[in-house]
Length: 289
Ligand SMILES: Nc1ncnc2c1ncn2[C@@H]1O[C@H](COP(=O)(O)OP(=O)(O)O)[C@@H](O)[C@H]1O
Ligand SMILES: [Mg+2]
Image (cartoon, rainbow, N blue to C red; front, side):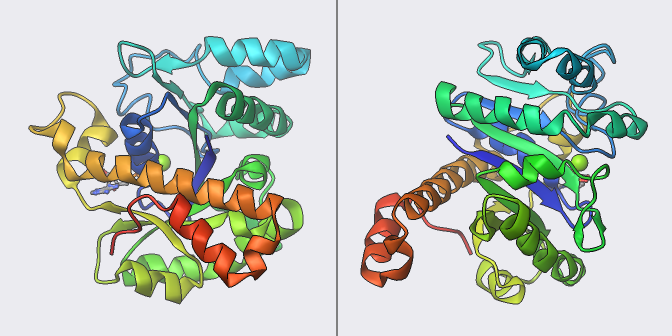
């Protein structure tokens, strides 16, 4: 299953989208809350159930001991989000000042997340927060750059509004270049559209010259539940956000497997007939909009 990193140009629904996908996936799933500006799930969706002695920050100390210690610490810092324990979250930082300590932890954490996705079949979502650039590159402390570099899909979350597109225009090219030069390739880049505002998927894709790999509806009651926790709203299980998040996880998996096949068989990318067959074989419902 893919490792999907979500990031924004400015707060627009990354944490909500990551939670929705993790809770909606048909497969075992994990959300790693790796926003260097600090996590919001602990005080929000989890309503303070998880103490500060638990979560991402503690992996930094374990990593200094060695890869085995990191893997063990990782497993013991995952919080279950359902009774069966199929959906887990690695709660994020409680203080943005902790981010500096994680610089050397990200590459090892990335390895652990990929093992979980590839060997244990987990759908892995990374909340990478907001993009911060320095001299045209991902900021080494203010972004979890190695996680974005190594992700199977790096999704810029945007809304279909003028404000969101205006900001996204400035970061999309540096992000694409970064993935080409320091990451697993610019084809990892895609958009996740929050369907708020006048712009539809094809317009957003054209404006940012990047494919919209999935869309999520604007659904304030369900998003509000993911943001503050508490009692789920009426009809939660059939809510637009949760239902479309399930479709989104399928579309993302299909996009990641297309990418993997194209990497293994580069002719697929240059031969339109093979590319068409591949598109049909891996398509699961198509992108909304
Ligand atoms: N799909 C959505 N529909 C309605 N409201 C949303 C949606 N996604 C996010 N929101 C709301 O937008 C605000 C910011 O969302 P959040 O996920 O915390 O953004 P980020 O992680 O990018 O800062 C929250 O109040 C959240 O409830
Ligand atoms: Mg957030």
